[in-house]
Length: 203
Length: 203
DNA sequence: ATAATTCTGTAGCGAACGCTCCAATTCAAC
DNA sequence: GTTGAATTGGAGCGTTCGCTACAGAATTAT
Image 1: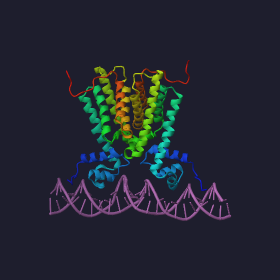
Image 2: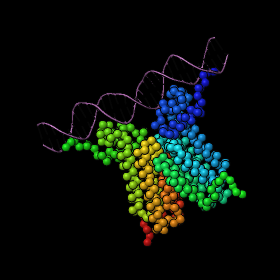
Image 3: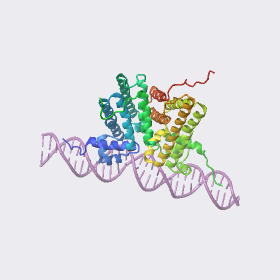
Image 4: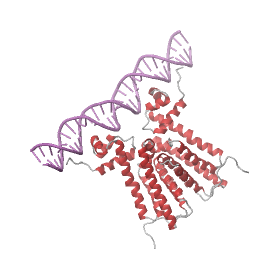
């Protein structure tokens, strides 16, 4: 029984996310956000609360659409070792083809130290990524594709660290051979290699 | 033949560096910097130019005093493998005892993507760190303490990535076992372990 | 001493910031 | 058609931003 929104909430959130993703929290103004979303400032505040509340919504939106989606897709479509390998390769490719970097890493450095609530979100999401790597490592060991001698916990910790490190290098020192070499060497801790995943599997 | 400065340039630069280090470029105001340095805004501009020029001086100052000093100290006081191991362990300890993080990583994410000149500084310093790891790896292989089978280039790339990743995790997910596990697993690529360096060496 | 030159603090510039008030507008419910 | 609730754009609030003009203080060369 009232006037409906003239914009799509999810589309607007996408646009705002893009701005925060590219420029960070402090360097993005609410006027910028409104412009990107096609809204006036008043509508932004009416629909999303203040700047910080909008940011947390964008952060959640980004992490669901990017990190969680990637984890789910790889984990249910690939055997565990290939899931890990493909995850790192995708990170390298995305890092090289876009200068946006990773909103999780960006936020961990810029916002988390000064905002305990956002720090908790960051820690929780990093923990999710770590758990993905640990599950895959353990499953690979059960399947025989990952050396039984490696410690799944430490391996997951290294892989999480590598992903974050790759995102930093991609913004400060973006050279393909650097990112690929680091990813390859990180994957070497998984032990005896399998054949690289291909489209067709010869029986 | 004129009035001399009433403050010490190096001391003031230290204070400014501390502020940029803790809060980043955008979130640190020139008034904050002046307060920390004990100077009025006019003196800041007179002595250091504008905010960006002061930042680059602080960045150089920080990197010389922290990264280059650590590289030089470890490289000339420890055998190559221990130099690498100690470098990572020191990063873990510094990350856990201080919330400041790493100005190199912070700047790579916050400033480098929007400032090509600062991006060049970042890339050059990251390259220095990578070279340190490569030199140590090659020297360790010659000395027999690092497996001859590892690729020194990829190893250096992974170690550089690990250091950057550790600095991100330290700010977003600061748990000792996570950082130590990642460091330990990264070091495992060096191959057959040596005894951990201790204060006294039994002959 | 005098002059020349540099440093220092105060005050203030225009612009942008996060945020809010408000009148006008729009649409569902009746 | 009328009513009522919600959205919308514009104007503007007070604050802070990077930066600078300016006048007085301080020191060396002459």
